[in-house]
Length: 362
Image 1 (cartoon, rainbow, N blue to C red):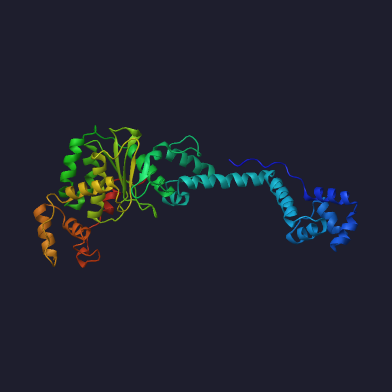
Image 2 (tube, rainbow, N blue to C red):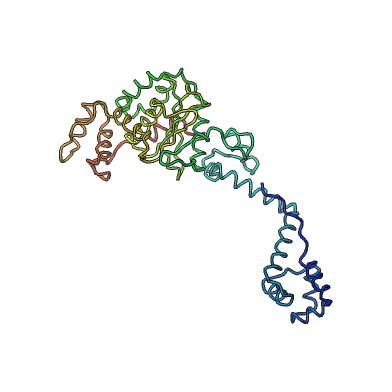
């Protein structure tokens, strides 16, 4: 909170003292400045502000710098403004809006319908509820453990809001007791399970059966988030995996999901660490999660591809492994055996509509 300004006095009071010390009348001073007597009278009475031009003239006449008189004028105006009730209310609202936007992109949340309040106070109360804090100035405790995958930095306001929405969705879910063995088995068969893209809609139930809360919150513009994994209520028996759907293509979202599962099973997610995944990272934990996700995504790995990869080879390989052909295509792109702009990717299935069935609203 900004400190309250000390009382300031009109610059005219200081000018009066200077004139008295020199035994000059207001008329004398006006003549020195080459100004009308009314000009000096209005400055002394506080009816006229000292400008840069008049500050320079007064300073030249009294042997002081113009900055001295400008500072006196500005200090008095700022103090007077701080005493004005309407102005103080406006400034308090500016401070509140600034704090709210430190927590979350308010305009975006209003646009998404996550915040619905009409007044600033209503929106503030909704943010407090979303972040589960007592006061708007508080730091959400669960975000204290959040670390971005690319760098040891705090999440952005957009990422904070996305995580808060993901946690809120997770809190609404009822799941079985956490079963890490069951989660491992699910990860091992997941790629084959979604060989039929329709089965993406069933994944929350599959994960709930092994004690994992799986949620979808549509990516916020600029968040750069692929997904996240964390513990609900800092409880090691309550893992949560959240997906943003970024990338949309089946193989991309599947890899993100398996990557988050790997974080959970490899012990990267703790009460002290909430994992946020953006783009590729060289951090050891991220590389380990990538490696594990890759093993699960294509069980047994891919055979060496031919020099010229054709659609027929991709489809026959996918059929042999038991996964969707786009998973094989995606691996080839990831391994740089195929260009990301290849025509073979045309018509690749997306999972956005299936994710939306998980209920993406928060």
